[in-house]
Amino acid sequence: MRDFLTVAKALADENRLRALLALRGRELCVCQMIELLQLAPSTVSKHMSILGQARLVESRKNGRWVYYRLAEQDSTNAAAAALAWVRESLAADPQVQEDAARLGKILRLKRETLCKRQTRS
Image 1 (cartoon, rainbow, N blue to C red):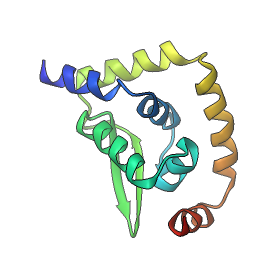
Image 2: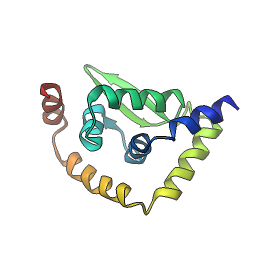
Image 3: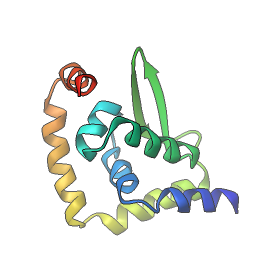
Image 4: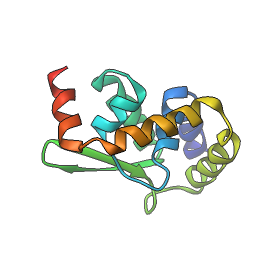
């Protein structure tokens, strides 16, 4: 039951849902997540930490930068089922579609340029 409650709490925030959906089929740098969500770096890090504790996302560090992807190996049954439910339920949501369009523009930017811009903010 603990896994279920942890996942349910992690999904109870719009920004965390947006972050999860942005990670579909890709890995994103924290700078890209900051740009997409338009939140402070510390806020994005906290959201990603909560998703990580629920085993919905995994992270890796490369130098100064942290990269996130949807959990694969460390995922629980509750997390895997929740991700499928979120994808299905929110596929046609206007915010999700807007985020997909914004993410397309963000992904065209050089990651190094974006990350440098984020550290100066």
